[in-house]
Length: 121
Image 1 (cartoon, rainbow, N blue to C red):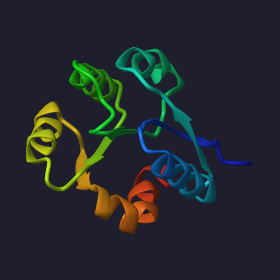
Image 2 (cartoon, rainbow, N blue to C red):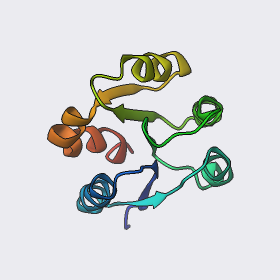
Image 3 (cartoon, rainbow, N blue to C red):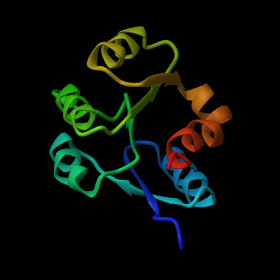
């Protein structure tokens, strides 16, 4: 029996990060759907993604609502942004994101970060 493909929803501004996230997800047997609004995230939660990734430099006002809705449906949330943006990091933690990492950590540890969510049965 073939395993179901795991899906990641990603609200990502940076083309390099979006490509890298897609490559790593593919290597782990998953795929990425890029979104660019909180409304689009909420619309796509019915596909039961394995993870929601938020670029804290891409999100717009009210993004915390999408985190709350994702969490309510059992979808874990990984947020990332510049290490110097302490306010954004704090907001992501307060919104309930499961993990909040700096861009540098995302770059260095992306395979391990995604594997946690894509290899869960």
